[in-house]
Length: 142
Image (cartoon, rainbow, N blue to C red; front, top):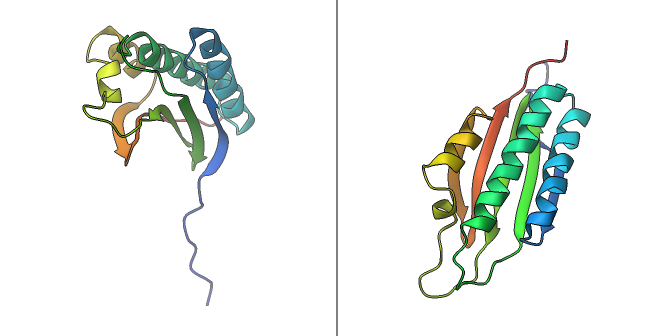
């Protein structure tokens, strides 16, 4: 009798932390894009994912309250069964009235621009870690 198969664990394509400075945004998007290409994602889709990451990072940086210290930003990109998921967010210190990351990308032009580039944009949190998850179903390369 054949062994039952379990779903494949997601492949971590790239995971990194960066300073919340606009100067690093372009490099972060390019790194995600290139990593997606390396796992077989078509170049056009990889480029859209990279652009979505750039826009999400800029939204976090530009909408962060001026009176609050900016934490380091976290980006993690995984792939499983032609589904690429990128998490963009940060871990917030425990303090009264923490700034919610979801407020950094309001339901305005930033969110609409990111949603137009990926299949799904959702907010999630895991303890003090708050993040946006950008998900894209990739097509096989032609």
